[in-house]
Length: 403
Image (cartoon, rainbow, N blue to C red):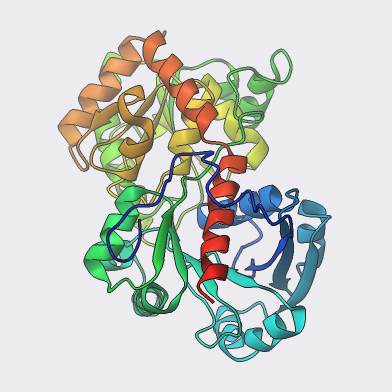
């Protein structure tokens, strides 16, 4: 999709212009300075993108990192150049991006710069590509801290007008970008990918998953049936509705538990209140942050993965669930429906009654729907990070041509 409303090819793995017929690698800088020590969401996307780009022969990747974060990126992309230059505190980092980064790009002789988290240097010697993950700062600003709303609204508007290319993870996000902003940039839709080796229906060794789950909660290790939510506990994930819906059907499934796997985010007190008022607090397992290695085990052993978000730019945990062969319950009218389609049980966002019925359905049929499972695995197989990287290289080529 482009700023003038036309659409570029966006199927996963489409060859596009990323094949680079000229045979000369394009030197691309990628700013990873916003990725925290424990990445989720956009941070995980950046990690996977660096890893996928770092093995390509048509990209000469320059990774711009925080000053104390060199080793992580050198391990992840050993063939790439890592430049540890950005300060760690967010205010200083954002100022550095505007004042110091343009000079770094000039000295590094890059052809295109990619800001993977909404922002970019507004004055730049090279064309810029910016990833806009979602428009929730416009759609529902109450879900975010006010300071972030002001910052990212402005950043998205600037990117839509002044970047060479904006990358969106779904058609839904690209449509919302055009609704909220004047878009002069080219817009490329690049779905996220999934690591189908790690997120697989088969566990690495016999009983390995049970050991992982036992470390999280003894009931999970003992084989208790459970529903799994994986993600940051924040307002747009609508975890309070999930808790209330589970409480409505819990008496019909007295051995089942609900697992909430993720760190508390801004506004997570609503989750605490919902659990306390549910009447089934002893059947809600709060794991906190779960290490990457444990997430596939949770998804493989779950009766269903439940992702009832009110809004998402993509919804990577939903794709990871499909890749593990897990039954998936998620919401209609979302980027998640765009990806999962009829491989998931779909309910309207915020519909507590509909979600309770869906939970009752999956808990009552713990063998799952084999046709849905097959379709989910087929969808996941098409959505690789290599295919996503190819779409990003398409975006870089478009940007380079717009110099």
